Length: 170
Image (tube, rainbow, N blue to C red; front, side, top):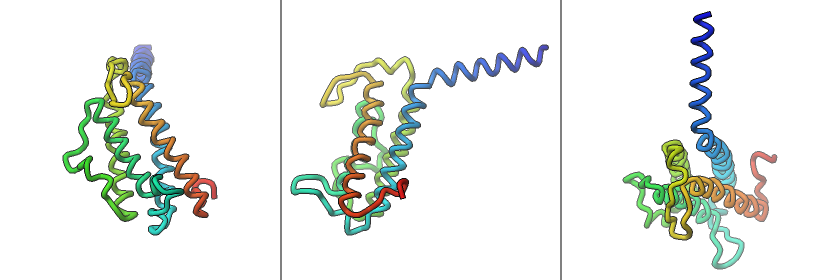
């Protein structure tokens, strides 16, 4: 009986802890899925297609991928997480070449996923000025997730316009 009681206590503690970070882990899960698909799309485009844009004044494929990377760093930085020392936000948009763009995107993805887990539950309601809006940290985390999803949709449209089939729908 003593072993069963200890087991139940352990399971209860783990369950409570897991629910403490439910918001962050849920956002991480959805964001991870979006990030994986954005990377898959980036890999599916040819090097030449990275310069394609649907119209003048609209981001190209490569610029859109770098915009997602920059957004990851920007939103996280507003919540108190400075980009890695080797990331220069002012020159991020100057990266060229498919491999280098994908490397920058992947690095930002890893960074932002790690930072989401560092936001404590008692911080979720803290107000943050993101420059474009004042909202709490939970809304900031959701904005990171939504921003990645928004540009996944954009890149799907770009892919279809270029005869590229999203890898997960082949």
